[in-house]
Length: 196
Image (cartoon, rainbow, N blue to C red):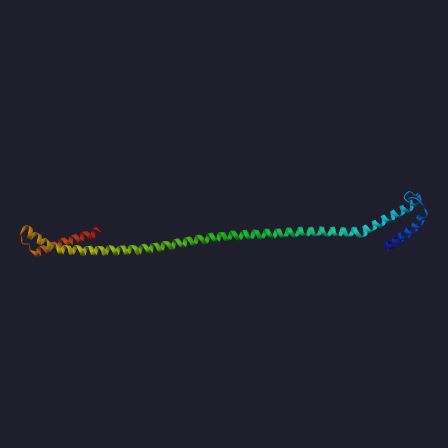
């Protein structure tokens, strides 16, 4: 309301000054009669500008600055809380990674241990089977050897008789010769069986 009255007064003064300045000649800046009105209007304009600045512009600027400051402070608080949350999450992730590494190591160790035990068990089974087959093969070889030696010795009585007849011209008792060959063959087969 005060502003409206000041504006009306200033417009009225301008019209009054124009009519008085129109009658005079020369530069109005150098006319000392106009100084009091110039001073009045300068002071009045400065007061109006001051009031406008203090009532309209300065509160809005200070409000904007306060709002910006509050936003900055709020953003800083949010950033700080987000950083704390991020640190907590990072620590959780690190803990989970460490736990996962420990569990993986345990699983690898148990897997290695169980695989080693399984391999040892399979190796024992395979070695037992191989040893059994080797023993069976040795027994088979010994039986075949004994059989062949027996056959050889059985045939040797006939050959021996023929050799003695041809070389010495002596008649050999076949029963005694067979008995001697059988005893010898028994001794040879026993020696072979004990030797192995």
